[in-house]
Image 1 (cartoon, rainbow, N blue to C red):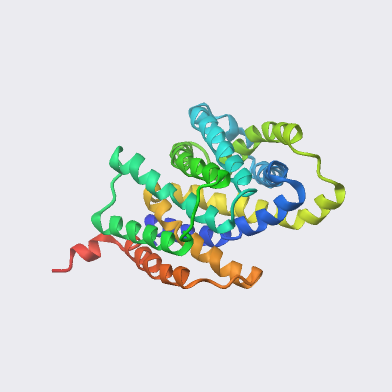
Image 2: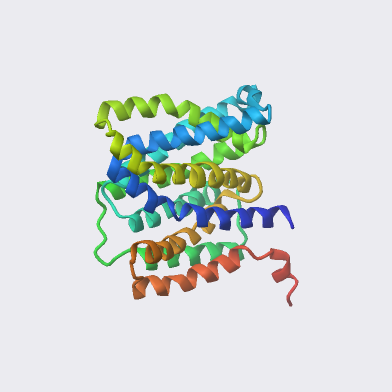
Length: 293
């Protein structure tokens, strides 16, 4: 298996895992609040990640000088991004969140392809465009309005390419687990401070009821999925990764049907076609098509 193919497989697996994120997070937010949910999830994930680093005797990687700038910038942008997402989920739907955050594909393309040096082949560009069209068909209703929740998540989508850029740079010096542990450790004091300042303390009963959701998001999304994300960044381009996230809204709709009994609309079913077609194009090795006369 080639390095690029490994990255593509990782993106498929993490998209399936992250499709649970909006559903589980909204349950937790309803019980303990947006910022407290984020802070507790990060605390659980950090405990797991630090345990792994200690077992691997790799804690010293946290202080490698060459990685410090990129680790600090990663920590700043990722904390802002997820804070905006958790706050946004208080005011918008899981479906709107999925499609708006997917717009990071557009911003990645602008930052790294139009204005930057990272290039996609024409074949892969058509694949990315097809997946984007499919996601919009599936998830944007006719009467879509940009409320405060949508606006917050749109800002998060604009930030996302910068997170990926600095994580990609940091990965050249340290492991993916080190990056995740570092950014979580940097975020924790800030998160609990603003949660204490701006949200009421959750009751013990609410915490107990929310724990299954908080643990699930922490382990599936903030540990396993994020490790896969950073490893994929090490193997394929940021724009291609962002395009492959079109699998995520499709997975979220499927889960919503089985978990929440939400029946997909005809618009959503039609959107599946360009997403699957685009996914096929963007994961095709270019040399196979170039060899066809």
